[in-house]
Amino acid sequence: MPAPVMIITGASSGIGAATAQLFAAKGYRVVLAARRLERLRTLEKEIKEAGGEAISIQTDVSQLSQLENLFEETLEQYGQIDILVNNAGFGRLMWLDDQDPEEDIAAQIRVNITGVIQASRLVLPHMIEREQGHIINMASVGGWIAPPTYSVYSATKYALRGFGEGLRREVKAMGVRVSTLYPGAVMTEFGQHAGVKWETEVTTPNWLLLSAEDVARSVFRIVKTGRRNLVIPRIMHVAIWFNAHFPWLIDWILSKYFHRKEGASTEWGVGDG
Image (cartoon, rainbow, N blue to C red; front, side, top):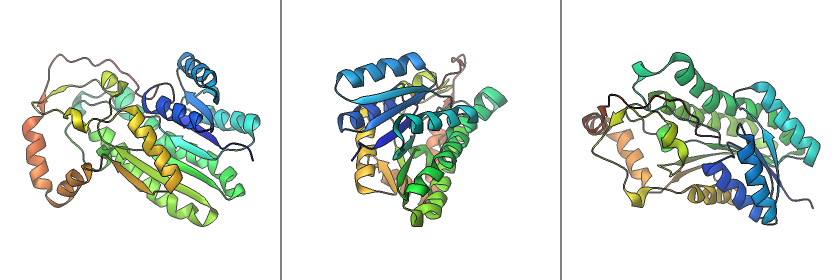
């Protein structure tokens, strides 16, 4: 029986790269998709040198034609797609009135939610025909709790909650699974490109920070258990509960500790690769 095939978007760094390395080590054939082709090829070489199997396909998930090419090339190469990890995404953590309508707001929506929807739509006919497959969407705790400056980013992650839930119920009877992962703060390139324009006296303590490898292991757990939703670390369930039941308290805390920061970098960047 051939090894399963996994497509990972945003695979050139961070969570995507760690997930690719883990699954390749577990015997999966991984398809690396992201905009930065040189990084993909470096990762592909590392995986092959470690005894794994991988191919690189340059893909901008905001472009439908490139997503179509991603799935066509994967099927031509391997003849099957078992898992799609919709990992590509980025955030612009700026006050809404500072965000550019196109490069900040529209771009986040195109990558974080429209790209996920289109990728899922494209892979579904193949999975439904085989009556098997698994779509895993990378959301965020920001899809449960929206701090200041996360308004657009959190909107896309809240949208992923609804999309994942609805799609899961659409395709369950057809043998296709849909899961959503909600990580808390992760030590990746994300923060370097977010254009942060706030200051706060409160930062995420080190013991709460996740590594990209922590998240990759959670993706593997979802694949093995079929979990519909997974929030990591588990303690974030407490914050989510307080946000749902005492929103006035969370409003007060977050409004008190987030302040506008003048002169911060507004250079646009993408956290997915």
